[in-house]
Length: 233
Image (cartoon, rainbow, N blue to C red; front, side, top):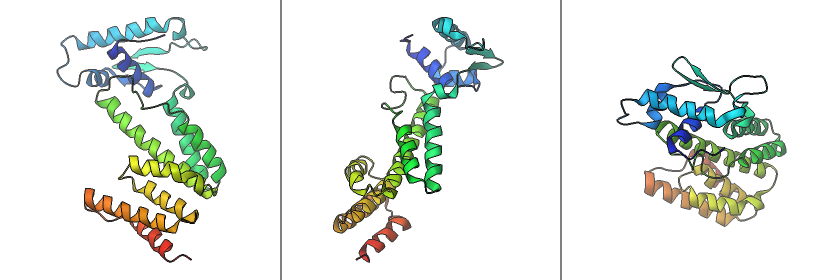
C-alpha cells in the first residue's frame, strides 16, 4: 500500500505516532491547516479517514477482529501493536539501554542502544509534509536520538572502546558544535587513548565556541575534566 497524497500521509503519520491513543479532529485540523482552514474542513478530514480505511482493505482488521482505524467521539484511533511502530521501539530500547548503563551493565547497555539507533534510517518523517504537531515531534525525536548516541558512546567508553569512538566523536562535535556532551566525551576518549594534548585542545575549542556563540563558559563537568587532565600523569 502506497499513499501519495500529501495530506493523507500527514493524517496517517499523526495517527501512527499516536497509536492506541485517540487523535482529535481538532488536532488533525491544526496539523493539516495551521492557518486558514477551509470551511468544509471536518468533511475533508472525514474523507481522508474514509480513504485510509479503504486503502487498508483486508488489513483493516486485526487477528482479534478489531478494526484498526476507528471513529471515536471527537476523533479517531489507530489500534496497532506498539512494537509495529519504530518510534515506540526506539524509545523502549533507549530507556532499557540507559537503565542498564545506570546499573553498571555497560556491555548490555551498548547493545541495546545500538539496537535502538539501528531503527533510524534518516530524518524522521522526511517524506511527510509536517505541520506544527509533526514538526515538534521531529525536533523532539532528534533530541532523543542525540541522547541515545551520547549514552551509547558513554557505554563504549565504559567498555574501554575509547580509541574506536574518537573518529565518530570528531564528526559529532563538528556537526553539533553546541552539544557540550559530545565535546566532553571526545576529551575523555582522547585522554584515555594517551592523547592528552588533543583532549585539552578540544576543551579550548569548546570554550571558544560557547563564548563566541552564547557568551557562556563551559559547564562544571567540562571544567572539572580539563582540571583532571591537566593534573594527570
